[in-house]
Image (tube, rainbow, N blue to C red; front, side):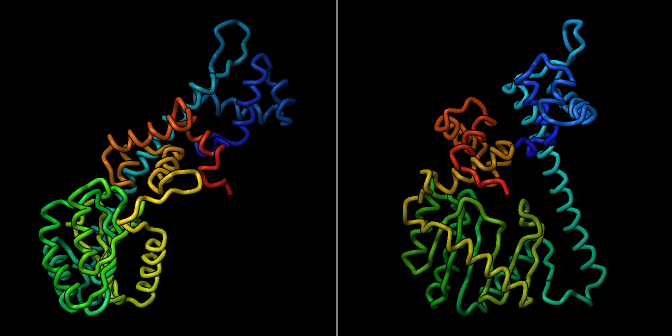
Length: 331
């Protein structure tokens, strides 16, 4: 099914029929797909708008179908453009939502929403985190969707981590699989483990998150700009849901000290996510962002998967991956 690339079921049926019967007219195509001629004409209009059929070079008057290798690349490029535009709209909406929350908090400081505290700016976030960790007693859960930990971040976090672990606080952190390629990150994780901390990695993480004693959670307003601010959540219902989210990700994540696990098809979790994102039409930049790697690394992963599948294009790689059962079945 090519509906994921913007092609309707009817248009796909007509397109396939034209590939099999390139000289058939509207009547012949209608018979081949068992549909009314009016429906076939509507499908041809759709195919024409998508540049999958073109005007004839001769005087026959019959539209000519574009070959699949060219046609699928056209659909993929169109879909990638739509996804990029949608991502831009999403980020604009996120920024607007953050501004609205900030403006609302400034207008009505005396009537905060129960269980939600808005922090504006990096200084406010840091001050609140200092207070939370000072009062921390039992457990700290964290999602850290960084591609790699910087030496500065490692150095600044060590004294607090050592203090918390020294007083018996249980610490569990989930990083992205990409940190396995960073020696400083691996060294830091091993240092945490030597003091009793637990570290695992996952192919992707839903957000940056910190949960303190299962009673308070801190989540950034913007995943791309953590300095913009954060929300502190204390509502019982929200904390129950966030703790369940953490436990679900933790259960499927891989301990950092172990080699990356591979599924039944010999793919790591990172490779499985990459092939799914590519099959959905995401760009290299979008794939890189989800995986926490550079666009160059994302292209390398994509090329390795295409070579393994024997595919000449990303569309063909998606088709072959589906045929081999590498992708979830369509509902």
